[in-house]
Length: 242
Image (cartoon, rainbow, N blue to C red):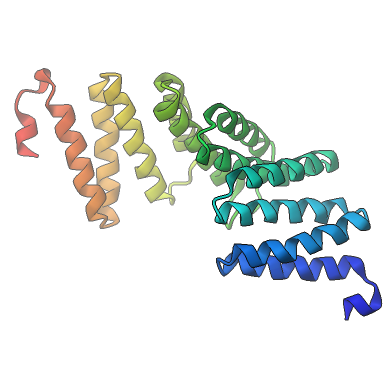
């Protein structure tokens, strides 16, 4: 009907929505087919906002097919349009997923730079939904991703600790599983730096939360971490009790 009425914007929107549904159904190739048609229509009518949305969706579809470079290419195009339009929250979201795709290709520095730019933009936004959460959660999750890459792929543990702590400070107290996960990784980095007392403190906090959540696998892991810390000579044989 939209084709018959020559309503290209509405036709593009309908195609975009179909593509989004296929992404949710984990049928990314079908999504790409519809999204490309949608993109051509938005380009024809110079609707840059919807063009950016479609480019971002194409990036997500390519990610689902593990075609990470194609994902990066489409996210990058979307990002240029978001910035041109001053849509900073949308730009932050696209930067986050661009960084994620870069991580998949082990482009660590590129990923970290994109995450850091996203974090800066998130910090400048008012509270609004992001994947069903607030921008505070977006900040925390982004800081956590930066910390992971710094700790495990850049050998920059001290800088990683700063971002882990930033993530913890930003999270809501209700985000218990996230808090425990971050405290877990933070304790592991502190162990590498031989800051065992501090590591143990975070490990015990994480274990307490996992116990509350009845997460048995993570509870075992916390016990293992505590055991590793206690293996240090200064703690004697306490690890045997674990």
